[in-house]
Image 1 (cartoon, helix red, strand yellow):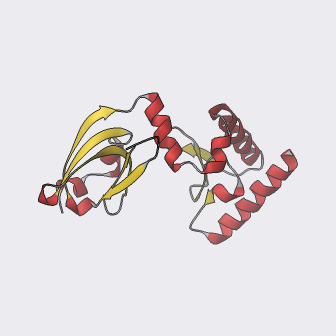
Image 2 (cartoon, one colour):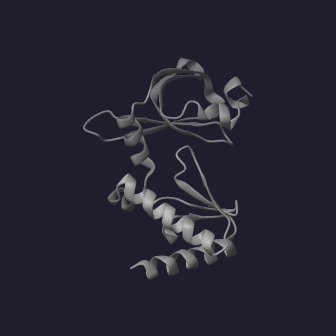
Length: 167
């Protein structure tokens, strides 16, 4: 196991949204913005913007990483650009203010119905329900995620019913 693989997710988190140079086995070098690091394999997901706003995604397998050097911090424009890569198309139709309003309204509604809910993630954009389910922007039933099928189904139904009442 190499030094990179021995790091914890909290260590890897410090590399998010940073321009890095990764030196891998056989002197291969990769440069790009860190989108995420897989907590299981320690693989790094890099984004580059070669031409005309098109994004190129590359993966450097964790076992091959020998060194990671931070070259630059992302400014707010780059952070938004990186966030849009992983954001579903439908949530791009909402402004950050609208998404915040949707999140807070859903959170309040869940709390009113005695469902334990909190916020998680770097920007607090993801709602966490009872620690077993997450709801990402734009906070509809399709954005619910859980390994427990029963909870997933029930919360999706609740969110669907809530959204139908709003319209």
